[in-house]
Length: 69
Length: 521
Image (cartoon, rainbow over all chains, first blue to last red):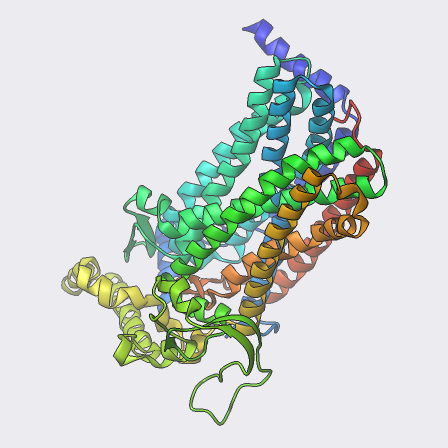
């Protein structure tokens, strides 16, 4: 089992080490994920119903209110 | 209703969603198609053991990797927007939308993320057969991911297999298979992924043409063109076939969208297909109709009727028939639908009040009413119409729908001819001499993107005012948040996505200029 995990680890390790254009791409991926999940999601995209209400019952009532007003 | 760009919350939310979806769709179709093209190339390498095919495979695989890396996770932003900007919609559809999206996440993670590592790092480390299987699995994985989101989109165009629960204000899935195998969902999936295959084939043919123009790596370019040419020709023929099926489904399930993208204001028997037309700039205020018919046009008689109902003399309703109703053809007027929708909304309001006031008798009566098939069929089916104030609100933006549909179809047929000519010239050995044609191939790359984007514009603008056909209009789907917050994130996304697009073009162009080498991870 340990040998298998070690093999997988080295597979990825050597793969990343040997990358040429891939290094730049990984940098872009990491920056992009940081912007999306840390900046955008936390500061700009809170889940409207989850942050406004504590339970599904209140969320249902709110949406019914919206649909019938 | 919401077609003019103003500063309202609905319009900004729509604009933001459209921006994100369109940028996301710049990356996705190339991944869908290039994955298979690379898999075909590697299969040829494994069969022939010719190292030239390994070089070819590795070159296109590198471009696939660049596109994949830059495009990956751009779709997640759409899910953020569901929760923030479209909370009413998200809640209303939650159970239906949740299942396909969850499966998509699992599929994407396990298939693509696992095997893409083998695909890029596994050369000379795993057996050639295992490597080839991984390449194929990445291609299938990408397409399977697309299946689930397109099933969800198909459900929005043609809701099926669900039941509305008035207690929770949510639709609940009654039959997963009905959602998955809805004819609209299946056709949408096939048509959309095939459009990705065509785009990727145009890309490969266009980039290969550049090598021929530069008189570089000519054997590599021709071999690439043969694979992409065959794949592109077969895909574009199937695309025309699935497009035809799609048009028939739209005519049946979303007749207003069909009338809009055909520019058909007044319905008729033996309706003609409009090959070319110019939408009038101003509405005809003297006419009793809401909109006048198109004046400048080239029509092919009876073809639209045949396309929609496989009968050259069938009646195809126009925009005015769908708004005013047509008793002779059994088409209910928009006003009648709006009245029924208002009654359905009233029933939901009374149900809510009865629950709040503890009126058990009325509560139970109304609960039973919502469960009645007759109420569902005659009233709740028109629930969304109850939000509309004017029958004209049902008309989508006709010029945008019309032109984007015709651009999509025009380029679709152009690509069939283009691939056929590429293969013919290669077979005759004359491709190298046809410099102008090579330039045409190169400049066809952006046309594939325009056609692909136009397809989505037809699908999404054409179905307005609905976010869920007949059940929920866009105006009722938005969250009550500050419009300025949506404006800020709109420009933020614009900046982020534009930066990603520039990065993609720069890295891709640099890699293409380097050309095929043995390396290229």
